Image (cartoon, rainbow, N blue to C red):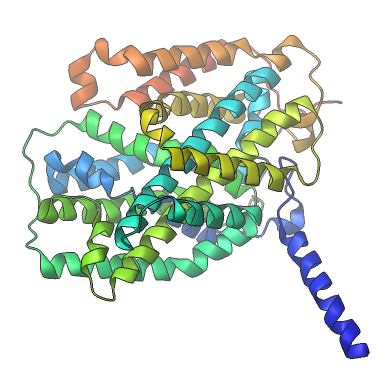
Length: 457
């Protein structure tokens, strides 16, 4: 009887342990006990998140500039972006909140709400688009049709994201070697079965265009999400080692872009297609490596689309009501299912242009937030202040930041008409648009009092 009772209790214990592992922190400050992620783990998270099955596409987009100039453009993009990325990542270590909660002080409660709704759907869109890409590649590898692999990939990602950043970090860390082996096998097949030469430039180098492509495709598109991960990192102190945390996200993101961009350009030159994963069906036995590699690459990246999408939705909901414990997993399931349905229906094929243009929104949004966090708030606003009920009109809508954002967005959209030669050959337009927003906001706030003191509730 004792053995029987123990057998009956075990499933119940396992069930409760599993429930306890599901992340339910939502938009609230991450508890001190959960802030344990190190700089090395942080870099692996972003390295794997950036190593998408679509990342080799950068080799096609910059193919006409040649291998050497593509590498230089990627390095230049990192030099331009590593400071904004590092500052935003450090924000999460200084106050353990997601970026769109911090945006309440920058844009006002209403402004942050609108951005949260927008970014929820943008991340949901990218989740569906990447799921569709993975489903089509796996259909090709396994000679299948229909939506079966779409749902397999979608379900795997939803389950993973349900368990939150703790288990996402485990997944990234322990599958990183497998991803390297899979893509290593594909690259080995490419170089041993096809004639490869280093692609040379066929047109004059246009640095503005090339850098715009890289930063919009990678690092600046990720920047506003960095604090959503770094809030789980070891809190920032005056001790040494902070530089590693500052550099870890940008190095991880751009290292993946560099390596996979080289492979993508070589694949385009040798086979006429940048997608090295499509070599899988031609590889006896090792074709399975292609399937695993594609699946892992998509799951790695899409987890960083679904996870922020969930958190952004929770920010919007928290504007209207108090948070509840289980709203995070419920939101994850709903958004994951809806995004997978969009992938199956093929709806995202008609809105990919909108998703590409979102970079024009993200960069000004991010740069204004950095100015506000560094100069206006002085990195000292306590976590509780971001949840206090607004008491002034500016706390509802901060018109200084809204107008600065609109100006930067307008510059991103139409600035190239002012000097098309300069923005094609020299200057990356989204970065300049972001700087325009930042300067306007800084000048507007020059005589305003700094919000460095705790806000009284």
